Amino acid sequence: MRKRTEPVALEHERCAASGSSSSGSAACGRWTPDCRLKPRCAADAGMKRALGRRKSLWLRLRKILFCVLGLYIAIPFLIKLCPGIQAKLIFLNFVRVPYFIDLKKPQDQGLNHTYNYYLQPEEDVTIGVWHTVPAVWWKNAQGKDQMWYEDALASSHAIILYLHGNAGTRGGDHRVELYKVLSSLGYHVVTFDYRGWGDSVGTPSERGMTYDALHVFDWIKARSGDNPVYIWGHSLGTGVATNLVRRLCERETPPDALILESPFTNIREEAKSHPFSVIYRYFPGFDWFFLDPITSSGIKFANDENVKHISCPLLILHAEDDPVVPFQLGRKLYSIAAPARSFRDFKVQFVPFHSDLGYRHKYIYKSPELPRILRPQQDPGSSPDPSMWSEPV
View 1 (cartoon, rainbow, N blue to C red):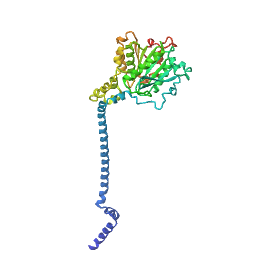
View 2 (view 1 turned 60 degrees about the vertical axis):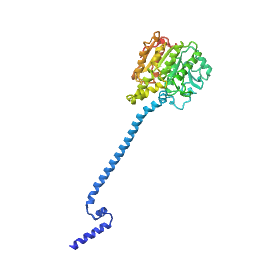
View 3 (view 1 turned 90 degrees about the horizontal axis):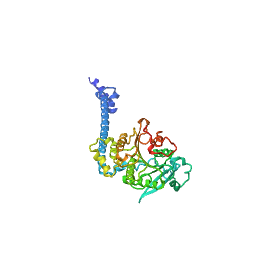
View 4 (view 1 turned 90 degrees about the vertical axis):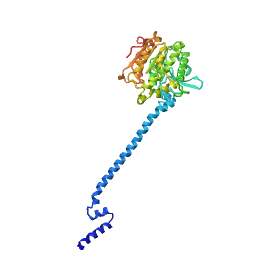
């Protein structure tokens, strides 16, 4: 019996000398209980690591969700406490697109028959102005000075004062393309950047924007003689345009026509309908948080109220697929203006552009119907006459 157990004892001693118990078991060629448990332990450890990673990921995701939710709730309170934020979001004058263009050189944007001016509506306020002469004068305009351009306003061609919308400058791509279209139709086009936009100096405000427009209009009228002067406003510029024309009508110097492209009824309704407001539209107290700060900042742009005091021909252009100023706001403004007593002796027209055309918010200038809408058909060579505007397309 002793002889039988001695080799076993020696064998165990060799196994112990060869290393750890697990490696010793393997070296000895025996399948011990430790060896049978090892794969299961490894699987359990792997599962614990996977569960740990999932838990860590979930904790991280939950932290991000809480941060986003906190920011979502904080923004309305921040806007309510700082109404100036809403004003900046409405004007967007700090957004200069396209970048790196020299507004002193309109020829860099393909406007070789355009001159750059600087006017001073008020002390400490300077605004940059572009004057594009009719395309038929393209050759004559080369190398001419400011005096020549100012004298040109007294020619027999009608003049459009263009009031652009928020963001960008007078050199914005879609704006430049519209100047070219209007110039090709025989118009002088005078446009400018409101105080605080582009290279114009000053602080933006509704009052200031309206006063800038009034100053440029008076500057034009002082040089244009009896030539027709039309006012064209786009988007936020429609608010400036109706403010201006209401004031002109009240002092009995109305323009020859008012053209509103993509207009809204008033800034509160536009802010509520803007795509940026979608995520807060059903937020409790939306009006109190987001709309009241606009009013408290003195921003109204009340087109719906202004049109009741305007007495000149009115043309409204609006694309059905406009994602910025909803089509129904333009239609609603027309329904307010058409029966207004102030328009009883003047034509009021609404021209919709079908959504299939893809003109959206700022591409109506692409419409091949635009020349027909703006120019009388019986005499293609004459200056446009707003009383001869074509029927809707």
